[in-house]
Length: 251
Length: 286
Image (cartoon, rainbow over all chains, first blue to last red; front, top):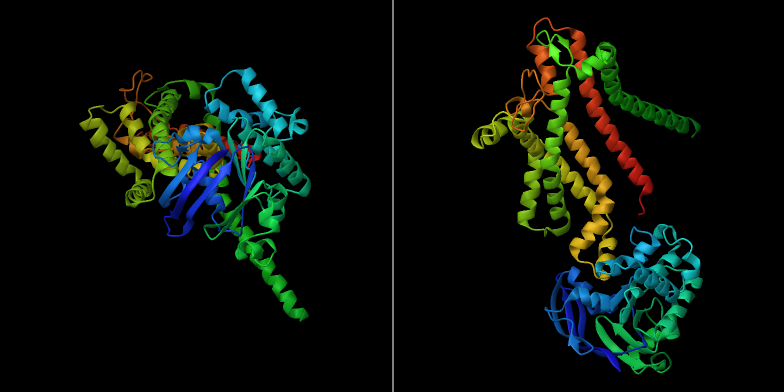
């Protein structure tokens, strides 16, 4: 089943740089879809379109549609606040809000109007378990989140997204600043998460792409070059440019 | 080789020495002023001086009405300038697009800061005292001081808001916050110490000014405390001006005592701002 369908999406920033060129792809539910390719390929821009974070940047022209469960989220009438609760995002740099660990996790829920302490506590524990960090922080939930290590902070950021029980989780190079052990923990968490969430990951290396992908899309200079299920793109790429990239000839 | 390196060493020492001297030269006047005022006026400070009314044509007694008046004026100024200034700073830092109109506003604010205080006084006389018919009053004087204080509050608050990392805003919005919720719950909270510092520094200036209240709210002498915003009031800086220039045979001790009270008031506010700033810096999480 397809969770998201991207239909001929093109996008330009107001300084004239083109970011996405006529991209079409179908992103399946409950799988990890990996978007990879060299920097400047449009992967992050695409992620930021999926929860309309691009609204914060100057975007000159966007054409095409993004259907989430059949509804075009690029429609100006879309309730972006509700959309962002359904489509969560983890950023490359772990940014915890200047609140306690608990405060980071309940922030989004409180904004959504949840005031019941029991619900909030339940969400905190559930999402910290899912992000594989409960055991490390359960005794210090009221301490400032910034006191955690980078790897722990990034998992708190993941938990902050999961606390809202979104349908889709976007991850933009979530492990680029992390050590191998923390990276392993995040990747393992993702494998668990896909049972309940649709995951779109921009990996920080081809190796990570190959390790995690259920489906993989190769982006080059704003263009979707190749999109294939499973590991085929890494073992048997069809396009010459994909082959050059995955075999390490450039990038 | 050896001689040139020892020459360089000597030059370096001379350079550092000169800089240390210049630093001392900037600190020296402040210390000198405090010591001088303290030595000349310290003996005037007493409970009666701080809580009593002036008598014998202000040549004896206390300066309570002036102290209370300055407190009222400072509070009145805060009442108008803080909400307005902080709101303007939020608009400029968080909402205003970068266009001609916004640049014009900024230029206006910068120029507002450069206007001599006596001009504010005349402006306040024209607008608040005469045109709006508030009379010579605490209200008119507070409004005049507010306009003078606004640029300080706006620019320091704007700076404090801009210092909050952009990433906090992006993250907050990405979990479903509106722009205003983000500002209220994250940005303002983090910028608060910086804003408070600016507010206190602005008010401190207002508390010490004479010229803006000269025509708008200051009374030469009041035998009672003001009991309405439409009353005129005595104020410490203006009182100091009066007893230093308008009253013959004024005991010098009372003049310096009054100056000392004003100095303590202003330096006390300054110290508060410094404490807030350094505490916040120690606690800051970014």
